[in-house]
Image (cartoon, rainbow, N blue to C red; front, side):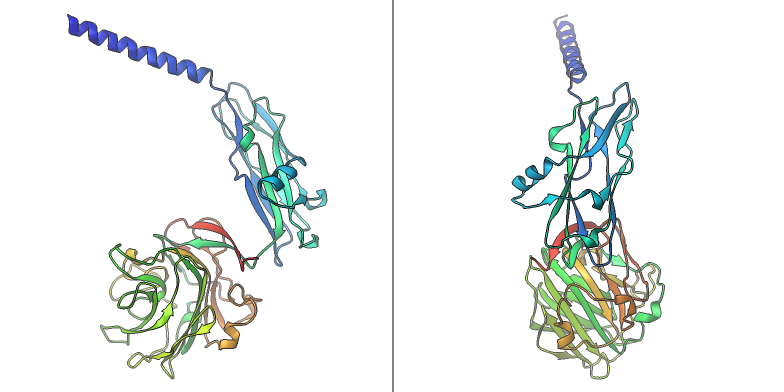
Length: 399
């Protein structure tokens, strides 16, 4: 009997907790807020005069009536932005933006609004020495706005040469469908370049190898293996052979956590390999048995010992990914000279890539969303990641 009374008491107590929680939910102070990042960047670049950005809002919980509100420019937000970020931005003039449909409704019973476009225009006529900000706030809602998420600040400024990069941690990139595979086949001369910031070289993940790019069991650029984890190794495998020839040098090293430009050249007529780290030519090496042309125009298929594809950030097993950020991956069908590699801004940009037919692949990694990586060379061999990429904002070179 006592046990039954005790059980009844526990049940009643539990019911009391549920009622209490329900009352708390009923009295919860509902808010509307922006789901868009509080700070959005709009970069003024040579190639683009206009951009479109989107805004979207949510309710903490649905209500029984429609919630209508307007996105409006809030000039007073400029002062807050300058104080918060120690900036000297000015309000973007009206001629440089428009919000075509600023009023939006969240229907009764729902929590998410439709997207609202903010269109930026005529940007190339802006003063590039000035930073502008456009604060856009939720106004006129019959549900109170969450103060910390009421306003989105669009910052408009001159672009750096590299503004977006991709992170390859536990990810990799291939060309699933070649548009012009021949462009990367039978390369008697080759220069491969990449701009990387390695967060951690492979250690304790089943391999001490971090892959940069290439084709396993053919011609591959990677870190580690028989060399220290941060030391570049160029691997060639002669046709018909089952063993690799590996080239490296103690000065082919890259530091963790620092942006580094890497260029590797190979000439099949001399078998010589040259490595440049941030434009500095390192100790040259030469293959003894690998004398073939490079064939990186490999169609993607299931990876097997006898059938390998071109990859960025992958070779042999998934554990050999490149743990860090990458940008400006290029392949040329010639040996670039030391002067060409050290030309002004060459680390960060190739000018007029669509007219340079020696540039057989150019993956900038500036796409900014999803898995797609556009090829800016004349050959259009767009690449794709195996998983959605993590995209990071940068300013390179640093101002």
